[in-house]
Image (cartoon, rainbow, N blue to C red; front, side):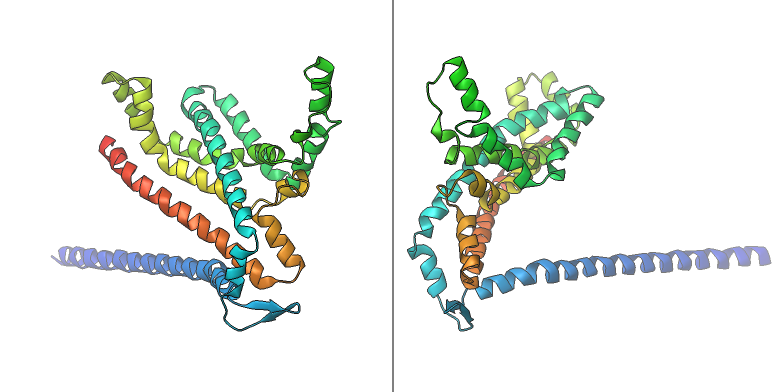
Amino acid sequence: MNAKMDQGTAEPRHGVGRLRRSLHSLSFSTMFFWAICVAWFVLVIVPLIILFVYSFFSTQFFQTVYEPTLSTWAGLFSSGRWEVTLRTMRIALTVTLILLIVGFPFALWLAKGLTSKVARAILLALLTIPFFLDLSSRTIVWRAILGQNGLVNTILMSVGITDEPVNWLLYSEFSVHFAMLPALFPPMVIPIFISMTLIDDSFLEASSDLGATPAQTLWRVILPLAFPGVMAGIIFTLGPALAAWVEPGMLGGGFVNLLSSSIESAYTALRYPVVAALSAFVIGLLLIILAVMTLILRRLSGVGLALK
């Protein structure tokens, strides 16, 4: 009887011990979560708020006047920067669209079409190599390739396609586009590839067994399930494209002015409120694009959940 009583008292004690450990683990997880949130707010959100507030100041005689005013924002659109903004949006959206058209099939083939694990590992390693190289070093090489006496013009004239060097290959919007494409190809492909590797092959087999064509499987199965990766690739590509300054600076030759050039010139002139306003404007454009893509994701998420 005593043994039964000891066993009966041991079980509640064991249950209390497990409850205490669960509460301790829960409290630690909660504290760790809130610590990360506070650190993120202090290191990321607070500087953005300061940046936005700073854009409502002005500059007089190379000194910042800490009085609220809308003159900085008004001058942002009355000084010709609106044309620069439209050019920046056009180039960034064009580069993003081209990379999406090229990167989506490549990511699909890499995730589902390539059967060799060694070849997949080699290609993924090649995609990560640009992250270990300085962007300026990778960009300035194109001068020797696209210049009047560069490799491309030398081949064109030696073959007889043209009698004189092609001038628009360098210091033009073409060269800026061309330099952005290889630099932003990995940020577009890698998120799409990761999302596609998470798609169960049984979904594709079931779609084929039900009589769906490859195009129908792509549109109704693969695209909805891989859409979060597509959105991530667009964000990771469009953001750097909007803020690009190395490519237009080195290959634009001063003929392709983007928002980054305006930010640099304002910073050189010590017009820090203008820098803050331009930076806040770029962030606002990104937020608008992100909101539009979120609406698209909500429309397609229902299709993806129904297929699951």
